[in-house]
Length: 103
Image (cartoon, rainbow, N blue to C red):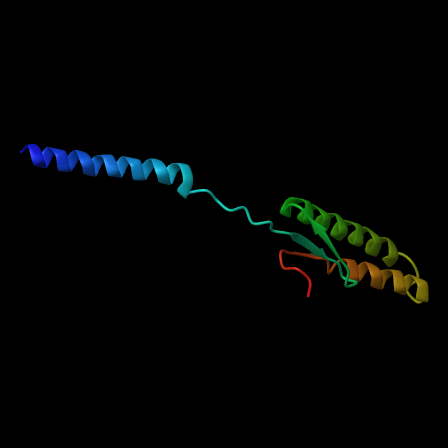
């Protein structure tokens, strides 16, 4: 009976030591430096530190493009300058978020 108690206590001791070691060293996350990109409709892009910053920029550009397009619709679309500005605003609406780096 004495050997059995000794073996059980050793098993419990090794289990506890293993548990403590995994808590201290085993579950550290390696933080990967993920970059967040905003691709604009004209082919350019911007890099941001967080996804929230990137998404805020996308929303801001979409709102600005919508305002520009609604203002230009009131003007004479036969003028080339107005059509060009409308086309630029249309490209701005193609702005999107991605976490994949540019090629």
